[in-house]
Image 1 (tube, rainbow, N blue to C red):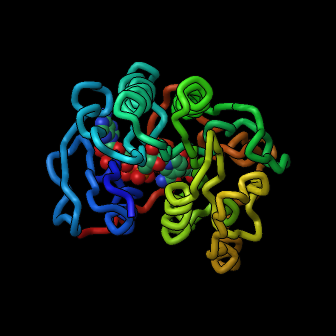
Image 2 (image 1 turned 60 degrees about the horizontal axis):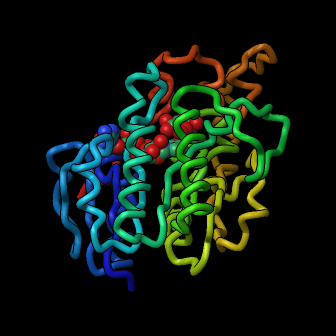
Length: 279
Ligand SMILES: NC(=O)c1ccc[n+]([C@@H]2O[C@H](COP(=O)([O-])OP(=O)(O)OC[C@H]3O[C@@H](n4cnc5c(N)ncnc54)[C@H](O)[C@@H]3O)[C@@H](O)[C@H]2O)c1
Ligand SMILES: O=C(O)[C@H]1O[C@@H](O)[C@H](O)[C@@H](O)[C@@H]1O
């Protein structure tokens, strides 16, 4: 069992599903977010409010930790200036603090939007070049490159989880891009308990018949998703709008993010039901 884990973004939707399983993997889980409170704590869990964009707030929390699971960020497209602190500087702060405190590994919530402008018809693997669809996606590219550099130059391991859509399935794209909460938990668990990972990238997607990406080269991580969005296909396809070949959102991996103007907010909330787990 690990001594100490740190989870950023603990008040968020994905964080809410990760807190309990992470608390069982270590003696001490430090959950952190920018909000005042995250409700009832699990056994071994404590909560600390911190802004990831401020080094002196986030860095002390990592002292004595084995690994940090970094999920805290702004989760939408926004003007660059608004993402700069939380999503760019925040990642730098987490990696630098992890290095300064001698952590073994960062497990990072990257996103399909790091490669969102690849065409949907291309079955991309984990080595597809960065092709961000938004400033939000660009911050994920920056963080993945930071992860790569800290591994190459400083020996700090990282697993970048390029999550597709971890939310309820309510549109055609999600039949391929869905990541169930159970599979999310398995993915993060494998990213933590695989003994040696160096710098790794893996897509966060369930075992969907229509999965648009290829995780074969990340198979050593032992991630074997169990859920399949095909169970929702009949209903979703019956209600689906017609295919529009001119809509960049339908033609690219980034979906609606591929279709918005840079800096235009509101895209992330288009299809998300906030089914956060409560303690
Ligand atoms: N949900 C998905 O489908 C999906 C897909 C790809 C990647 N991701 C990534 O997973 C992570 C979690 O996403 P989510 O869906 O749970 O979103 P969320 O918005 O519910 O959670 C993000 C959390 O980060 C916190 N946060 C924002 N700014 C912060 C700051 N400056 N300092 C500290 N905390 C801050 C927020 O308060 C929030 O609790 C994000 O990094 C997101 O980019 C999510
Ligand atoms: O593309 C997707 O479905 C998801 O991508 C993630 O990066 C975003 O955080 C989330 O809001 C989107 O719904």
